[in-house]
Length: 206
Image (cartoon, rainbow, N blue to C red; front, side, top):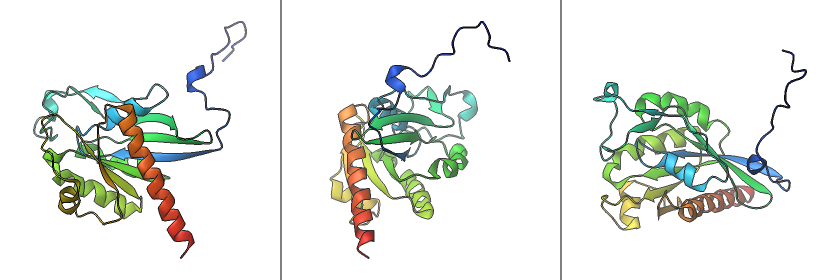
């Protein structure tokens, strides 16, 4: 194709360019069942305009997708969400949100490839969905933390009761969060990074 005489092809927007101080990047996946807030978390914390692959939900999904507790949801992720956040001047996290419906879970293996760690978002109205999610991460050897997303109509339980109900190991961090709030989502990611650092330090001593 001949571009002679055409306008210069624009590069990335200034706000989308990596900081010049960046020295390292890590891939983090945001996982969970349908409607737990993965797209919301990526969107709230990303410092660039997030890439989303949401499509309008149709009647064809009735009886196929479990949308309990998400009756007002009109769109759903069919491939992935993507965002980016600078944790320090030198470290950038690339965030990949997974699709929630089980019929799209076959895409997860590709999204898990090369991931340093994961955030498992949980809705207390549907705790049972989380077992399959965590099981897939454990099978792939991807370390994770658990974030209980606060929905207005969701029941609240003490964190330690939720740890027991989810059968979490004592060393796996679990916390409450509000995926709509940037500061809350960032705190979850910082907890994950501290957890990954502790695992690395433990491994270096063995």
